Length: 363
Image (cartoon, rainbow, N blue to C red):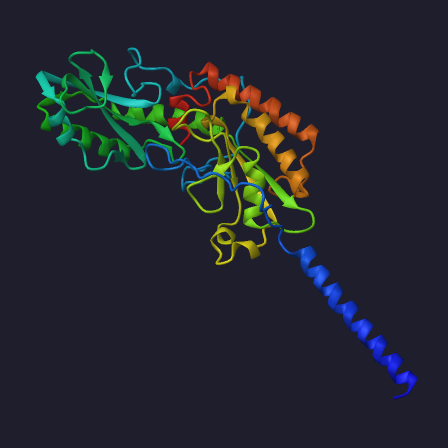
């Protein structure tokens, strides 16, 4: 074999080795980043008492005939008439600020067992929650009927508005049917407010709520290598996130059990459910904040900014809006100032963010 042949063979071998090595290096470079095996796995979330996890919607929720729009941050917007309780103080869980309340008078006392047996099969009128409360004989307080208790009166309520829209005439009629059936079963006499007045109140309240609803989302995008689900979960866990009820979702919980999470973090569900999640490539994830659901004192927006910046730094990513535009500090500052005005407006209407009434209205 000539020296030229040997030289060509060696050169060919070197070229082949270089190509194989380059391809292997590129494969490793582009493979989804994996979690550090020395770090603990993210904690599982403890389900809330009702067995469900609050859902955070990033985009405005559209309902045919009742389209929501982008939130307005105008603290000087006049309060609608719907926000003025018709009469009386707030009682129990039902509140005239956001509920239609039909009192049910009794000739005598009714047992909690009888009230429970008379409850409607579904506690909704269309898309609006229906609640029944009794005036406890011993405590003189309104509460949900309980076995072994006795009640001197009842009240049946339906919510005026939520994120599906305002209470309409059909839903009000369904509420009346359910309330009347309950009253008949406990030998009570209900008194219903005028339907047209309540529907008008519902529309005004819905207009106020839709103009002061805010659901924010930051998108964290990978700059170079993609991320595996385990890598995302491990990095998020360092900032207090725990696994949510849905694959591909994590939440930053509050210190109080049963309360909505402060923040949500979500990525592709299919990647989380893949047969081999380690090979799933995630190039973006979403941080979300449902503003009316979280108390102002939790500093949710400030924490959202801090988490987004930290994850971008640690995971080699950038923070953008849903259109891919970089979110700079100046833009964040403007959003934060608008949110402070929104908080002030909700406070002034007795619908403070994170309060029971706000959580019900903005749900």
